[in-house]
Image (cartoon, rainbow, N blue to C red; front, top):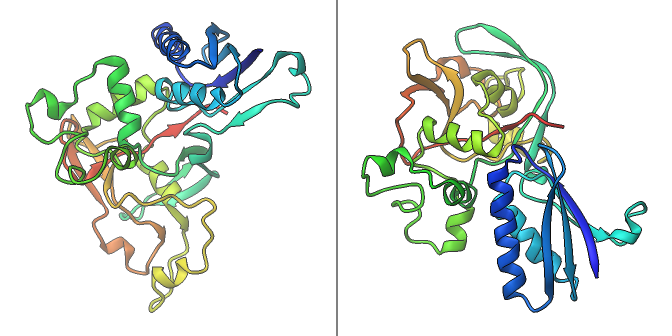
Length: 290
């Protein structure tokens, strides 16, 4: 059976297409059901595939390969070429990205110092980048993180926070031990970007009217649905915003969800040199394409 499929991703480069073609070729050699698979580059944001197989269960294997090479892919489908118009025989898979994004509407946000800023709507990761996603970038590019370059024994894939869990759980864990330099390299590869400090606040805080004294965030969250809510990493997160000192960036750990009446008195923002990394720093990304 000859089928065609397509998926959308950022930064569809020749290097990544070659990597995808190589992995699909390896899959066709190891799978008795998948007989052939090759790639046709459509544009800088879409890839079209032609796949020949015996068992439709091969679709999941193909999707796994796509997700390894293009972890930011927003959606993928593979369907019978003869029904390309109606798509009645399509097998659809949500890739990491689409189901993991939060739409943030345009809004005006406030800072602890009393300043305000208007932020245009955007899409941001519901969760921080995971170890598996960051590992896909490292394996595709050969990149060495700041910690690895420094010869640190603790790195993004081996540190005291994840050493006692199995590999599958490690891949699902929030990536840490990454500097802003590392985060920017990942973003360049994946075709995404870090949020500005204002964007981070716009996504994190759902209601800019402070809660009245005596009402806790816990009580407010009980009335809140998951829609539009970021999943807290429990870490501070890198932003694209630079501090007044050159080479220094702003990280944010809050406020989150709602504003308590004394939120301006707390120290939510910190400033680190861009090469800094530790177990309590991570990052999430903004997707600009529609």
